[in-house]
Length: 306
Image (cartoon, rainbow, N blue to C red; front, side):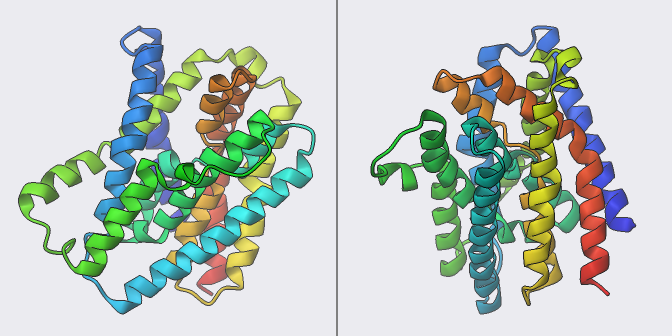
């Protein structure tokens, strides 16, 4: 019950930030250009900073092993999500993308920080890095119906992976633990921007939607059901079979059960697809997540701690 209340409270805080973003957009304080720039700032600076900061801890063989194990199981969960979305949405590439990729960076990461502590972030950085690489490669090719070999540059040339590499180097070398205050304080300050900025960007998506049509489109509910219930429950089943610390399981489960990632709307718009429908999937699943995520983690906690 405690986990339920903590997550529900944190999600309510996030909804307040989203409401602020919505109000600021309606008041024309944030423009379309401004929201894109905020999203770019998050992806290129804030989220990589959070990842780097998670590695600024004392190096131990146990922590390195846990990071490696968490990244391995993150890959398993992501492959599971891709397979389920392809099976359930064979005729809609946008719905496949939306169901497969959670909002682990924008929403899952700040939620993990708030509920499990900053030390748990290290368990999901591999998940977030792999998710972003898959979005920028498999996801874009899926939306565009592209064939042929992948461009290897797109696999490594992105800020999320760069943040992961820097973080691992700092962690293994021991430099992260002894990072001077001149760097540690600004890094922590940038990390604190993650939740408010991410939620305000999602608030802009909310402000653009017609709520009259949002709740009257059956396809949106199907995507939300798969993203918030089907894939998370299958992920919970897989994690229940894994002999790893409970906090590692909880962190991966939260990342896997987050709502539809905002990038589906971004990529749909960039490639001339139905970005309005994609935005609605993001918005509806985000509005439903304060009910699904606390219930899921509360159930998982009962299962894993008894």
